[in-house]
Image (cartoon, rainbow, N blue to C red):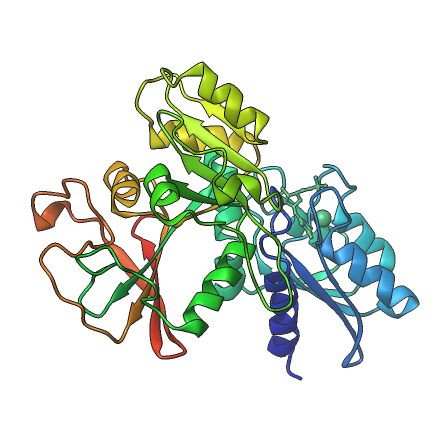
Length: 361
Ligand code: AOF
Ligand code: ZN
């Protein structure tokens, strides 16, 4: 294995815990002594030991004079846990390879400086994968609001259903399983009351070998969610319902009795900016929007999203009245279009999966 391969391994470890560490970042670490892997670790949950601490514990005495590969700059501050820099120095590590700097202002560069000052050799990779993995954390640290991904599935002519409303299924089994992975890697999933009333979804993550469920969030201005809907009778994950200031209080009572948490906004109509602050306060770092055209449009038109994941099925359905992924009014001219950068293009079975990042995010 070359040195980069050890970093790739640390990155794999970090990717494996994406979605379970909020509000902390997912981080992986590998300790290598004389070309042998002597310790591996990942940050498993906020409040628990950091990735380096797990990897050093596994390495024990073999950490002396060894190299440490860590996807994120080791922390130099005391948070819920003591600084990793001191543990690294104490263990006798000689060289540290860092995937990317920690955007947390309490750490940024101070971790690397501390290690160098103690005489360790530090190499910063600025690795694109390491940067991609902590994008949601970097956004959350900067804005105190979740990193928003809008996901949609369309036919090759851009429709999300037939003109009759029929939509099961647009994409094939591989793409649908990929969506369940996506759900399990998010802290929360959001849909609108329209989707609840029309599709009666569960919004859980259903993977062949299990997966973490996201918190389920419904945008429901007037609290029309039926207490008998699948999302409420299924207790696998919490349900948070966001309503406007004038939503009836008897409905709030009924839904609370049914197990939901009702979060009321200060205005009669829902505001996406306020929603994101409400979710951020509750430590939601990543939000997956799986909704219909109107909710998608409110995220698009307010500009409050970061990533767009598009599954395209090799099918043509046609129809001027067949819905598309974004409703609303739309922007009047091409100069106002929201610019995207295509980050990844891959196959999911027979379907295409395009991951795009909003420009300026
Ligand atoms: C690392 N390794 O595995 C992680 C780091 O409250 P604490 O003590 O858990 O600290 C959280 C902060 O530590 C978090 O905001 C981020 O800056 C850094 N996360 N650092 O060296 C890790 N998860
Ligand atoms: Zn740390």
